[in-house]
Length: 307
Image (cartoon, rainbow, N blue to C red):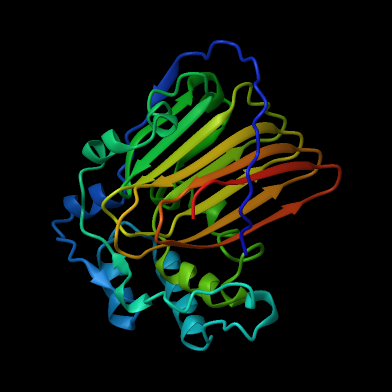
C-alpha cells in the first residue's frame, strides 16, 4: 500500500537543454477517433465493460488483448481484500463503490483541461530544463519531447499507448509478467484488465541522460486513472525520472489504480521521484515494484501530498 509522505526536494543546478524533437503519437483517443469508433462511457468492471474497453482501443496488439482477458479471469477469482486481511487492516475503503467508477471514459479535450492543471504540470509541456518530457491530460497525450541526440542514441520516452504499438519487442516480455503480476491481488488484476495510458522509458546500455526526464498526468473531468509506468534501464545507463500525478477535487468518488514496473540492470542507476497530489475523494491503490540487478542503484522517492 502506498504511504503518505512529505519530502523536501533538493535544488539541483542544470545546464541548458539541447534542442528537442516533438513527437505526435497516435494516442488512445486519437486512434479511436480515426477508426470511427465512438466511445460510450462505461461504469463498473464487468465482462461487458472490458469488451467495451477493448473495442475502444483498436490499435492494441492481440497479445495485449489476451493479457487483459487473462487478468480479468484472475480478477473474477480474486475477492476484494477486507479489514481482516493483515495487509489491509488499517485501510478503510468500505465506502468505495466500484460499480460507480468510470472504467471507460468518453473523449475530453485534454488541451482545454490542462489549463486548470497546477503550474508544476503545465511547465512540463514545453520540456524546458529536461532531456525528455511527457504530459497526459484526461488520457490524451498533449506533449512528448525527447532531445534529438538522446533519440539518436536509442533513448525512448513515450506514452504507453504508442509504445505497445511501436516497441512491442521491448514491452511484451516485461508488461506484468515479472515485476507486478495480476495474481498479486485484486487491484493488480483490476489494473491488468483495465489499464489505460501511462509512460514507457527505455535507456540503452551505457547511455547517461544529462537532464531530468519528466512526466505529468492531470485529471480534471475524468474520475478514474489506470496508468501504467514501465521503465527499463539497460546495463551502465543513468537517468533521473520525475513522475508527477495530480487531479482536481470533485464531489464524486474517483479511483487511481496504477502500476509502476522498474527494471534496473547491471551497473545502471535510476533516481525515480514519484509525486502525487490527488484531490479529495480519490481512492489511490497502486502496485509499485522494481527489479534491481547486480551493482545497480535505484533511489526511489515517493511524495504523497494528496489523498
